[in-house]
Length: 458
Image (cartoon, rainbow, N blue to C red; front, side, top):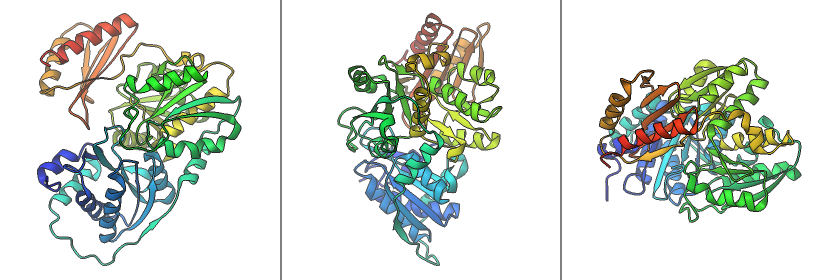
């Protein structure tokens, strides 16, 4: 059996903004217990709230983490089964540091730990996560503490649902809504949230049974094939909208009444418009992969767009620095100042429902004003030497007229007619390509040339 506390394994599982790996060879209860203790000792937190998803290994690892944290002197509140945004709600609502056991959209053999300070403040590589890793590596025998913390259980599900609906109330015409939970945590949170909407919503559930083996499809809606069942159900039911959530339900994706997937950039622009109507002149964050339409629309609506790199810890830090009211990512993460700057797939979904219910047009017509440029979607490629491929792309495109390069996150290549970004995944051995063009022809040409170079030696 692998030693999960070895330096090599710790280096592998501590990522840019979470801990993640396969169970039990990379993550196990022993590592979770050690992280719990180090989390308390390194960050000096005295209270921790802990939640977990539906993966078979999650309850045991969460319990081990709670034991380690209490042995280090912290009082632990176990909220049990939870979506990641429900854990962030608990951290903000209760004013406690947090730990969420989930591997989000990753396949069944994975698990992970997302950590935050009180009020859902992120813990990433630059804000304490690597210090926790180093403390685990050098821990040795546990040191005695002045006191052993308590461990208690507390249910926050109904308070979470009420809080979201306070932030984005839904009223107007009745909507038929298909929700694909992908056997993930939305199957637990959606009934609590939609149950409070009464007759405002006719809910059609897909795969609400909690099952961390994901028997129907991967809980990763950024991949088009995982939306097939939702698209079919929207058309079969004559639904107004389809919602898809990832495994830990912190991301949300839309399908319109025609069974067409909606770009997260489009939803970012819609929510930005709504938030700017409530908070005129505010700052809106968008990561560097979102559509050019997002900063254009933000400026048109009187807001200030701020571009940032990919990842929740970076987005949240930039939101704090700029007091941004909202932030959106191409990957389906949406961040709200009124939600402790944390991301919530369910809150994003409620914004979409509220906007749609307040009109008498179909979703496709509502969203048309926010869709301006064709997007490739995210295209993943397994690449042995990622740095070499990025160097080839830079050399190939960098000398061309009208082309600019930047390295805020990976490599972004921009031209008046198109742009693309290539970056290494923080959680998987992949290069991720996202392309946009002024029209379908320009997008396809840039996509195909970049992809050919990325996969040349594949």
